[in-house]
Image 1 (tube, rainbow, N blue to C red):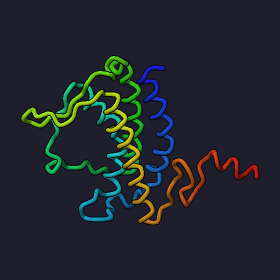
Image 2: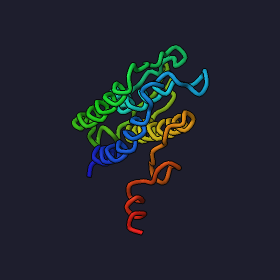
Image 3: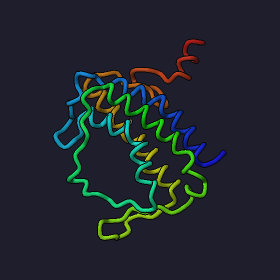
Image 4: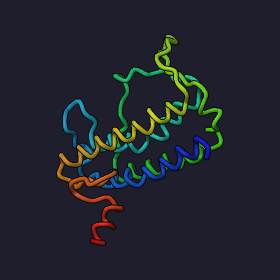
Amino acid sequence: MSLYEQFLAELEHEAIATRRFLDRIPADQLDWTPHPKSMTIGQLGFHLATAPTGILSFLKDDRFVVPDFNSLERETPTSKQQILDAFEQSIADFKAAASCLTDEKLQSTWSIVTETDQELLALPRQVAIRSLLFNHLYHHRGQLGVYLRLIGASVPSSYGPSGDELPDWLKDLAQAN
């Protein structure tokens, strides 16, 4: 199994839980935020939904020039459906990237640099995908779970019980007993 196939299998597996989290975002509360410095729940959901496409765009070149994050404006979705559609497109984009994510490419070095060409980070692309994509997804999915809890929505299960529901594999066991 190639490195890309391993990443794709993980992304497809994790997409099941991520869809559940995104689907729980209340359509009428997209502007809710827990704090003035935090993203709205809609912005967070959209950020989570578009992460695979975003990370792939960073990794296509050998170097990524880090932007001024203080000047970036977060995209604000106008509907929950926009978030859900963006996630499906992002998964499709990752699947379409198979031809350019060969093992050789994934083992090659990728760098983050400043606008003045100062190297901040250099690592194999496969490590960047693990850290900047997958760990990033898990971080923001957990953050979305906290947002959902704070607004009183039910929180889906990721790997174990969430307080609101059991994971599918445990539901089957609970029904058998």
